Length: 163
Image (cartoon, rainbow, N blue to C red; front, side, top):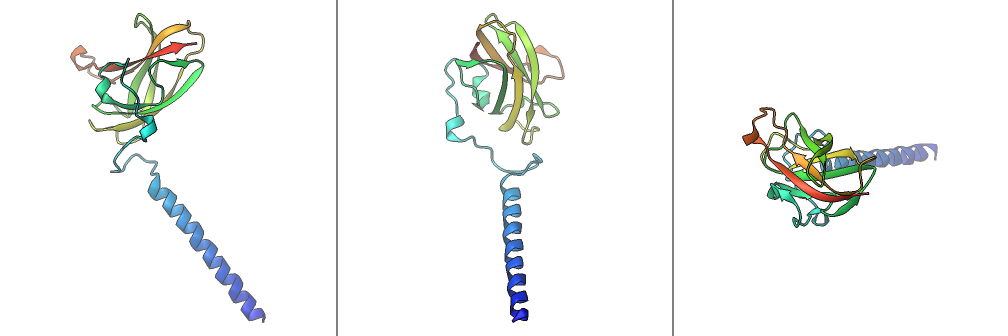
């Protein structure tokens, strides 16, 4: 009887280990974290934003979590997908502009997929609207242009309402 009990316990342990291994490997296969993958980047349908109101190279912006005309305040966490070679060393410049397009604050976003591409690149970051004057403003996504040459500059401006 004791021998059968041991076999049952060992059998259950083997089943539990197999289930845990399956869960661990399936999570790693679905969400690689190192950015070194060949997975196609396709934003969920609910993240594809309307381009109305977006200025600049708006066709380079595939998705962005803050839509044009959104009310923003405090620290804004955002994510999106860009194409067209905006990144340098995995960073892209993100600025807050006033209604006259004067720079109020500068930050950067970080690539979450292979940034050395002119194709789609996932990115995310935070920017702080705290203490800014209320009214119309813009979130500017500006390519990181290490050359400093104006002909290599490109940007996307998303209008927002600062509160």
